[in-house]
Length: 430
Image (spheres, rainbow, N blue to C red):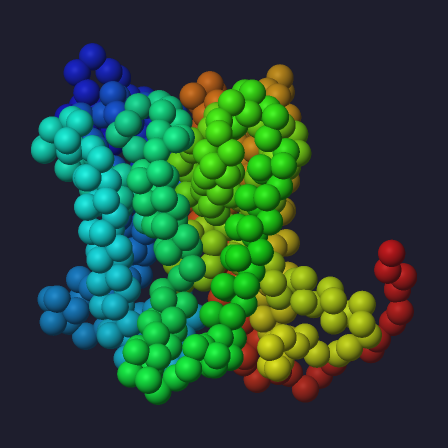
């Protein structure tokens, strides 16, 4: 990205901007310090597209695909990494899993590109329209939020149902996670073969799928309703739209905060209530084994269920007739605690280098970076060089930190426990 051939004629790229762009692409965040459509050359845009695709598929899956097609054996260590990365119960069939992941990604992006192409190609021509369609589809499915439409994202298309619902569909699909896809696909296949009734559809799903679907549904419906409520009469956001357009814009905002980064309404135009809601949704993000970031819907669900369990005076965290392992509860605490800690440290560091920046804008920016969302209230382009490096660090930790620590906690908890325990002593809580 720092090479002159990646920069458009008449533009110059600093090393910090090149590093920022590379990081936001690989971490599929979407925060950009320069306008992607005009600052980068064709080669630069292709590099950005490649980095987004790598970040979306995952480095582990990509490396595995390369090994597979080179007919190289995947070592036991790498198989264990794949198993932990995709939260699989066993190591058998890992190669098949990786192939299915790559196939699902390309299939979804292809369908998205066709949908975008229906709109873009008749208006800007075959070559440019196809390029915009493919780039937007890859960016939307990988939850990157980077586009070639200018510096206004999808704001010019806030009333366009085709572009809105194509983007919404890609974001939701990728945010559910591949394991949920396969579980749903298996159940629909059984229904088609008349081996399963619709009445038993939900009950036969795996617990992972049930938690993801219910939590995602609550966040999307609740988020859409609250945004619609808060912004209904706000002329700066959706107040001037028709009722149907207001609902569509509210749904898009609730969906895109799940780490996508596209926007149809200026984020700085929202009321404080909507901004706080968006901060919460951005921190939560999507679901495991997908392309979304954040602490994940399952983490939120486990934490809420754990609180309810303790309030009821029960010992085990239970849901849908199943007990959740204590190791997963500890893992959820670590993931959430680390995300909040990284956000707090990043805020302190940011205000040390830009003390006069508006607090809500900085909090929005860094929460977006921790959750690898890509939404901003206009602060990204005004960042100083030290502030850019703080956001780079935050995006990087936000992408790899919660997942890495969560896997480490579960892995350690599954090892044989020591027989030596220290004496207990009481302390006061609350």
